[in-house]
Amino acid sequence: MMPYRPRILLVERDDSVGTPLRAGLELNGFDVETSEDDEGAIERMAEEKFDALVIDVGLSRRGGLVLLEHIGRNVHDFLKRIVVISGDAAADVTREMKAIGVCDVLPKPVHLDTIIEAIRECLKLTSSTVH
Image (cartoon, rainbow, N blue to C red):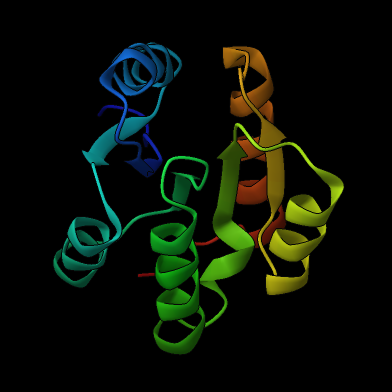
């Protein structure tokens, strides 16, 4: 029997970031699906169960906020399973994301080890699979 691989939905429009990040996460024991935008992510979350979500709000802050608001309204307690990555590392963006209830906010460029640690910490804190 194969060990459980946590399912991650990675929302990233930039292939130069998303492709290596997906590969790195998969090599480190995660099952990763990707979406390029908030609408695709909402559709995937309606169809599949994920253990955590990694979202880049820097490329589409409005889209990222729409996605976070949707999740907050429709998927109970899932915000605590979200790691936000952002090219805008300003303190107000981090405060805003933390106020919404996300697990962690990481500045870009994000190192693979840092994001893996953040995802594992989120999973440890929430410890069960939900939608």
